[in-house]
Image 1 (cartoon, rainbow, N blue to C red):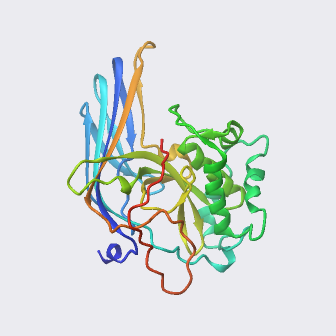
Image 2 (image 1 turned 30 degrees about the horizontal axis):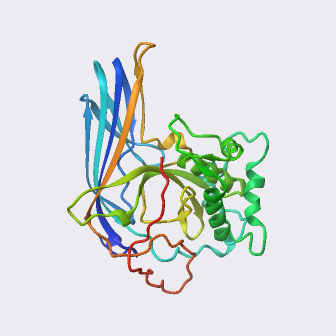
Image 3 (image 1 turned 60 degrees about the vertical axis):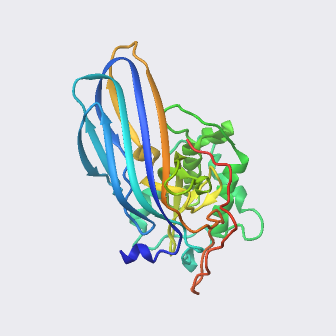
Length: 338
């Protein structure tokens, strides 16, 4: 219990209801569905309660994947024209501390090599995984190394994060899958999962370990009074980079933010396909079509102290951390999700 109480950040108790509904034009048989709705306990997130309601009724078993994510496998019998999944979670979510832990001296500039005891476990997170026939991802990344201090590790990552947001055009996209990073650069835009994967490959081109995150984007500035109306959250994707001394550090290139109480992590993976909230199949006639809808609502059960969590993190020092900055009102900013 003390582990959670001593985390240096404001705490909120939240209830998140994620409803997904599929309507089929003809009866279909449903294959197994792999569901990732349940976050893992950590020092910045404490899971209090979970619920999962599925229509039609399903047999559900729980497993852990290779990354330690909690997965529900839902199996169905018979045919249906509707599949509805309603996940309800209550959690304590802690805001980010005012500083990152200090980055190890050897890792404060790029390039660097990971320590021998960590390198084998991080190796697959460093490997480039997507075709780049024109070799454009690496040079695009290196533009952010220009100028004085261009190889400062954390400063470079901040510039890449905000550069993705500022240089590309966000476009909500509902097609299945994630764009290859080279396509995102060539087309000049994408959605949150495309941006996250692009920054992952940018980091890997620098020899940095990076991985994909799926979860929710939540704006605490939209909170109603406790116990009153709910506000919208959004399914969202972002990424994180492993920095020796600081550990896994979250970056959201869609919104240009670094570590935030606005990001509620559910699952991680080396590749976006490994962290899909819902993955399943159905069997029907060649004429069948499907209409999908998603709604996410967040309810604040216990508000956090008013604090500006959008201030980008900075690497700390060995000195005691300064108190978090406090503003007169929560900061608002336009967000992109999906």
